[in-house]
Image (cartoon, rainbow, N blue to C red; front, top):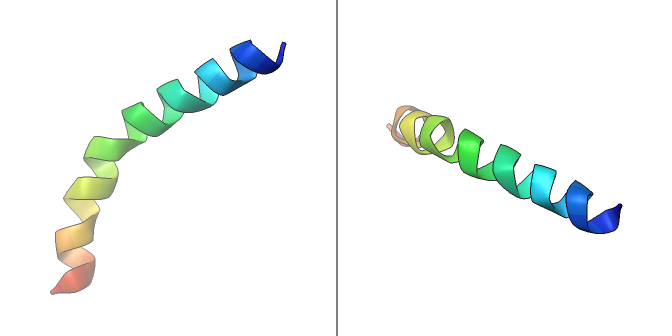
Length: 29
């Protein structure tokens, strides 16, 4: 169970990375 939870969290993090990287420049400027 813990392994599948970690895998799901990893997928969510990788899915969120592009949007996070896209928003960071907006926050920095």
